[in-house]
Image (cartoon, rainbow, N blue to C red; front, side, top):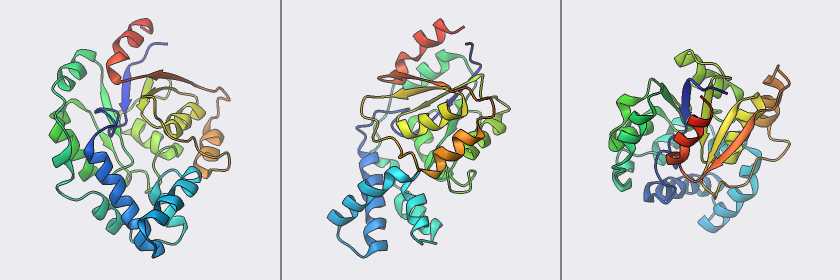
Length: 231
């Protein structure tokens, strides 16, 4: 199949998952969990590991538990200086340009986080649009509305768009809609449980009845070979 648009996840996809920034984001999320449940960090870690497989994001889980201060959560998890620990990716800009295809971003983070990361990486101008968690009414991937909002922003279709993400539960959502996804990396976390509302909605939104497909790659730098085979 020929693809005419690339839809990228951003964190741990455009740069390696070993980033210290990602560790900081996870730590601050767990601080929010500990604060909400009035527990210590060890209990917060255990609670999140147990429950996150039912939800698209930590934010969705906490909202289901009764948390209402969404903007407070986002501000704590994504402070102004969060990108300070993100290492430069000197090959990234030239690589993305070499793909010679329209590209956009779909992230479960807020737009200000995307602005900081893409600015630090020096690639913000290469993407036609960024679809963030607010655009998806705070549900995000793998809810179908998140994917469809990203496609609508750039006038692309599911069939001609290749989606790349480092989390299996998000590529699973795209595939459930009938699309083709690239799963980046070899440590992709647990898939969602069968009763996860986001995946139920994704399967219902697939009116074609056709399941998509997932291709695994270690990094986005393996993408050219795949695209060459699917011209």
